[in-house]
View 1 (tube, rainbow, N blue to C red):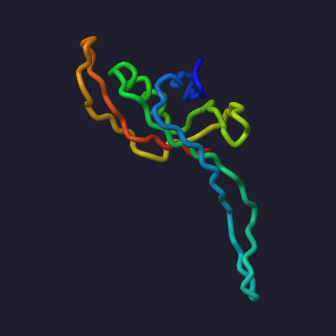
View 2: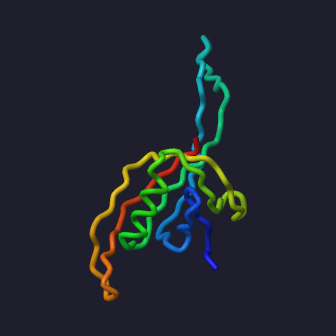
View 3: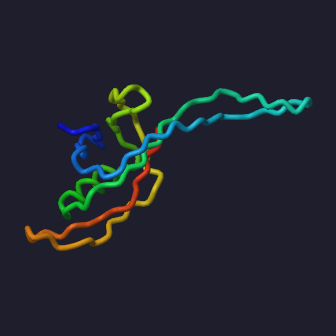
Length: 123
C-alpha cells in the first residue's frame, strides 16, 4: 500500500514518487493601502501548490506522465499533510517545465528517464 496518494488526470503515480511537497500559498486579489499606511487585503485565498519528482521512469511511464500533464489544467487527487493525510481532489495547472533526461539502460533492457521537479498549482 502506498504511503501517499498522487493521481494526475486519472493516472495513479503514487508508486513512482521520489520527493513530494505541498505548500499552502496565500493569494489576494488586491491589497489596498489607506492613507494611514495600513494594508487591507481584499479577499484572500489559500491555494495548494504540489512540487513532486519521480523515480526514474520507463519511456512508457514518462509518456503517461506527459500525456496526463499535457492539458495544462488537470484533476489531481493527492495526500494533503496539512489535513492529517486526508486525500484532496482539486483542479490544478502545471506551473513548471516538464523535462525528462536519459538516466540509464536498465538490466530489463528498458531505457530509464529521470525528470526534474514538476509543480502543480491549484486553479
